[in-house]
Length: 228
Image (cartoon, rainbow, N blue to C red; front, side):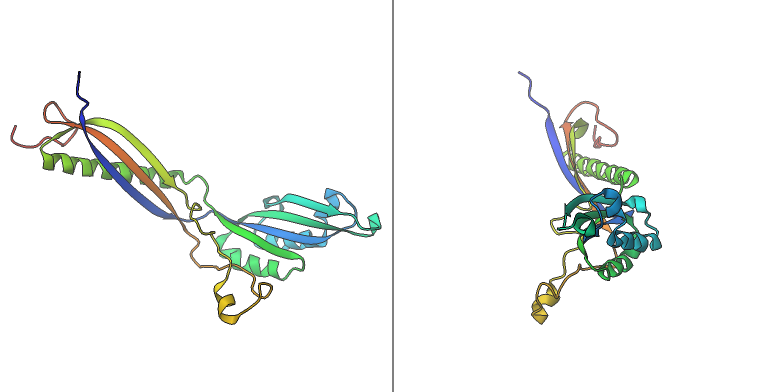
C-alpha cells in the first residue's frame, strides 16, 4: 500500500484598495400623481426635480430606475392621488455625492434609504492580486522546503477566497449617529450618512496552496538543496 506524499501548506492573503466607478443611491419619494399610470408618475414634480438635479451632475435619466411603486387613489381619482416610489440612481460620480445628497435633501418628500459603491468587474486588479498571492505562496513553500532539505515536486491543490469591497459588515456609508448621542437629538432631527472624501474599498484574496514534497526525485524550479 503506497504512502501519500508529504505536503507543505501555505496560506497567503493579499489585498488592494480599489476605486469605485460610481455610487448608487437608494431614494424614497412620497408625492402625488394626477392619474394612476406610469407615464403620470414619471412626470410627477418630485421625480422631475430628481431628474433635473441628476442631469446637472452628469447622471442621465436612464440611470434612474423605479424599483417599486405604491399607488393609492384618493376619493376623487383624477384630483390627485398619492404615490410612494423607491428609486435606484446609478453611476453617480463619487466626487458629486455631497452635491447630490444636498440637492436631494432640499426636495420635499424625498429621503435617502442607502448608498453603495459600484466597482465593476475589477479584472485587472483581480489578476494582479492572484499573481502576487500565488508567487508569495511559492516563495514560502520553497523557503520551507529548502530549510527542511526537501524538494518541491508538484502543486497538489490551490483554493481562492475573495473578499469583495462591499462585503464588510458595516454599511458602506453608515448612518450618522455620533452627534445624536452627544446632543441628545431625536431621530427626526438627525438624518443623514457619514461621508468620507476617500470612497475606496478593499478587494482581498486568500490563497491556500498545498505542494507535494519529497527527499528524492526531480523537483520544480529552484528547490533543489545543495549537497547532491
